[in-house]
Image 1 (cartoon, helix red, strand yellow):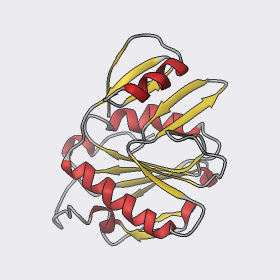
Image 2 (cartoon, rainbow, N blue to C red):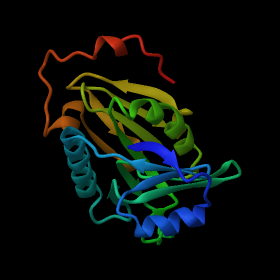
Image 3 (cartoon, one colour):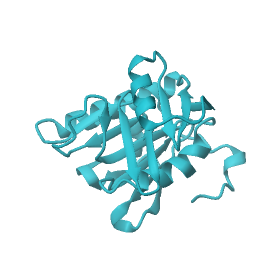
Length: 203
């Protein structure tokens, strides 16, 4: 996840050139560069399991699944930005840059205490600006909760919290029980959302 910004401002070209040489990943938003901090083991395992499941599901087709180290570009009249989604799927044959995807179809972020606010607000808003994006998924890592936003539903919030509930990713024709998204780190049956999140206002 992004941490503090530095070296303000820089151009997108300067950012992309610097990122090729940098040992640390950075995200770029409105001329500001944000260093990416490390992820927890649970976060890594959720991403890895999901990447493998989607890659197997899409095998043999035109779509490709990416994890953590490939950038997504946002470029329109509002400005230009680059993010590293946790997992995403792209299906456009014209996306041939070796490090950047401009036309993702499905974007997934795994949340944590340090990333939840920006993932639920700024990133969600900016991902919606990408014309090719059909679905955005936010997955909590500390308790069972998955949010799915679909362009076809005008970005209505679909909330999944029950282990046996089927979570649909319509953009790629994938469906699985919520519990399958946490298969490497299953929760106890009585797990609860922390009290300080119970009355949280969702976008």
